[in-house]
Image 1 (cartoon, rainbow, N blue to C red):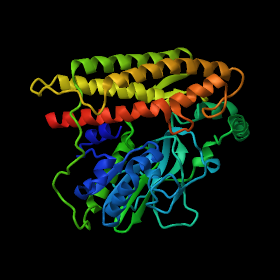
Image 2: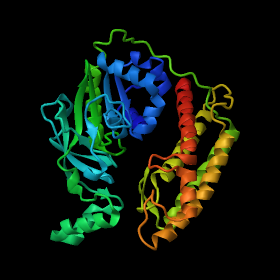
Image 3: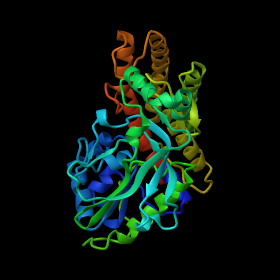
Image 4: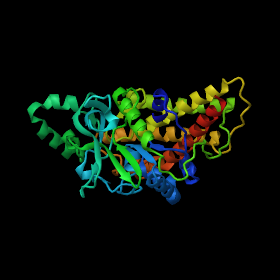
Length: 418
């Protein structure tokens, strides 16, 4: 999402990894954009040296833009980096399953809002919420004001739910919260701060729970452009060793783009697509838009959708590289053994089919959640495929780690050939 939006907005960027950060790559930049995803995974990847490098970058004038999990990464609630004193709201105090369009009110005095209306729609994908009990000094750049179209909590369409219950919607939300066991009333999001600016030493951080880089989010993308322009203007001025040359990035083997590799990736994508189709036929999910599933409560959906989309992107990038007639012959990379990845995707899809059907059967006897005990078969399959926490582990974590590396290598190989 980030890469596509940055390209669309014609914003120049470099892809850097946690190991690049540990090696000093931030010395060559004014702004770091930290995309969404589980903050705990990012903390683990950065390590102590990466965190120290990032803090040094900010204290000496660097700037930071974080979306959703990238915003949460900067907070003080574990697992985070503690770059700003704000915390996440506790689960019992926030709206944990919100997604879709929301309207925010901007700060007209801030340069990032130049040329933008005072109210505009953006999108959120299961955000946390800021908590500032000690009233630390921050600048509010955006405040939640109203839900928009396609706004959902868990698997409930808010517009349809409130139309059905009319002036008794407050009681209806309370009943649903008792049934689901989580907060569902959208009022818990309003009027919380959605986007804030904070400082660390001479540096500035803008933290946004709305995903301003979401595809087809035209107002969010325009605000994203303004925020990056503002941070770029203010970043780097005080960095004592800031360098204008292109940074040395992590040396990785050339990406695997052989015909045999492409065939394996296509087969893996086909298996993932068949798994998605099975879920659609069994009313477990539907495509909410071309890049995101909407799934029933009690089953996972994000991991399944991201698997097929990641494989689709890997196939597209591999094909693009193979079409480069003038490109040298690229040997398969030893860093991502694609045959092993293919075997694990095959095993994952086969076991996921069984898990999904067992979860569907169990849901007929009452509500189930992703982490609750269901049966020995379901519990064992969940542990094997996803681990025991919401921030996926198990086989899916192993697959995504390798897909992440593969996509990085393909992107960098493409960059060297253009």
